[in-house]
Image (cartoon, rainbow, N blue to C red):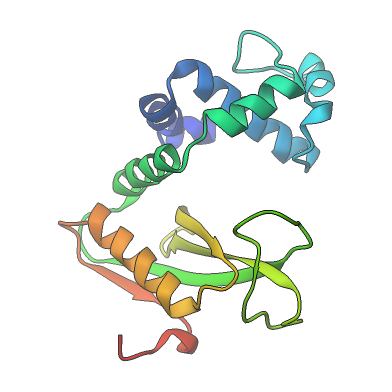
Length: 184
């Protein structure tokens, strides 16, 4: 994990956006979610006692909950994605593979969970996730979540605009499936 972080300058980028203490917690939580295949942070303190951490202390699940609610703002996440994207877009012609998917959800009271154009069951609310990977090696560059009611073309336009912002000097080619061909 540390080698991957070093190879892609992840710790430096996280430190620039979140500061060292929050970066260490983000890395601890990432390791937890990868190894435990879970985002249930009630078990994090027990897991942390058995594993090496980036942080200097073990955080409680209530601390983690407060951190997720108060320290991870959309503006910080967008800033991170911008720095990450700029760092990993190569010079010259770049090809990006773009796709989106939707995930049905039964969550209530979450603004992003909305009824949309689900392929499986249109009666279920969903969340749309769009992502862009670098074609040469499959490195994830950016992602975004949208309310389930937003149509694919609107999402694609926002993602392409974001790519254009972070790659001003680099000509990009976006590769999409036929569902994205449009006049807009």
